[in-house]
Image 1 (cartoon, rainbow, N blue to C red):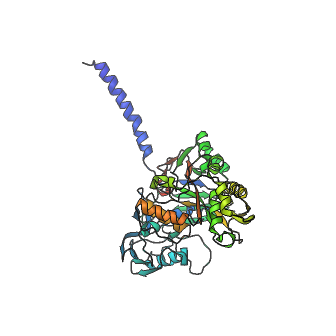
Image 2: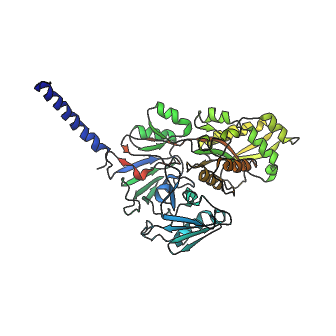
Length: 453
């Protein structure tokens, strides 16, 4: 039997534990209010994947944690005519930030402006509360495709003048001054009001400056490039990293000198993926010659990723030096990767000129990244092919069917997969409940601030 003094001591200890636990519990509850400070290196409105776009604009669908399509601006959908016709019913009572009601006509206008003649579907029509898609080819993964950043819905400006996008998302445009974009909470958002009152998004900040501002408390969320994840962790930054979701790949023109398929195949064999991974990207992610990562299919090993200079020379045959251009994003890491690839290609007899992406000059090769938004293999492959501008639909979800279409696409050598990389961000101590989407985007509408009033 315990003595009374022992009982009193134990009761006192339990009471103390409860007392200290209460504030800790309270601190974990989301608070409304405050300004979340975010810094990025590029343009927050860039397409695809600009962070401001994901905050201001919604899609007809979104992608859930399991990779399947979830309702967003559309609440339900159904396929007809063996996936050649789809109808999506819009959510009632949704308004754009300027007060304009969401309807099927402005959805159709937005989608048409987004992709024009290059849309995956043949035609799209407004019929009452329905948006009707028709296609010459079946589109079994259209609900997942419509979650892609390219198809987010914006209010089209009737006079054609440039302006900040007007959407239906959790945040709306407030101001832009000296590369500081201010977004404020959408009080009547169909998803519910976000926790923070506003987001200050500072654009075109070097990664070094971003990390410094996070360390001294002037920023709450900053970028961590894949090649610097270990460095960020060594500096004790709180890093959130996704699975490998960003495919680094070369897109290859099939015109001029590269109309010759053997030359395109030679390029694919000349690139040293291991050097890119080990030297440029600091062993982050995974080397790949497959469009989908190994964890989604299990067959990625069937696409050999080793460099083979001898075979590359054989494929070139007796051709002299072949002059080609290679374009890449102006960011430092993409330029370094492009320079490394140019050295690889010179070893196999190509003369390579590096040019910035977006210049009027046509590029024979372009180094790009594509985002894997779904964790389901069929919609993920379908979305990647459409992002790359390759007119193909993935009709078979079986491993054999997926492998077959990958083989057919990769044998053209018009896209050359190189690496799968994670996306990562560093988070300040006052941010709570921040998660990344399946595509590695920060879900800021669900985040809150510890010191919010």
